[in-house]
View 1 (spheres, one colour):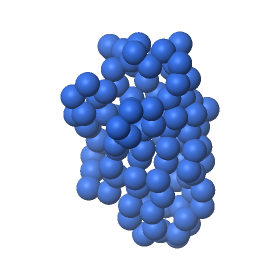
View 2 (cartoon, helix red, strand yellow):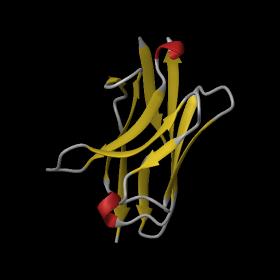
View 3 (cartoon, one colour):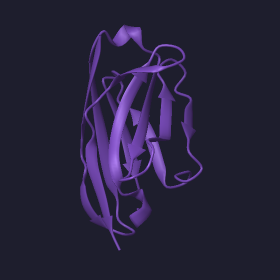
View 4 (cartoon, one colour):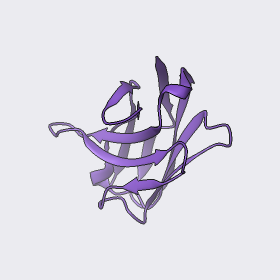
Length: 117
């Protein structure tokens, strides 16, 4: 089992920045990719970004490319999501999740990000 705990959410004005953290513990050898997702009120959960544990390869949703950056620390125990030039439409609960192959099977409880206009 892998445990994930998000932190770093909060209230920020449009154009501002936040950095989210996802602390990963447990059987960290059992996953290969960590992703960030978000869910706004009344909307479906959507993919934001992901990073591969072995290669460091990253992927981003088109809506955040150029504004958000996903990274890990050297021990790969924490995954970060640096969010710059935030927009009101970025307001959502942000979740991190881990997967070994095809599906994200381990999820955190989320952290709220609110961007005011």
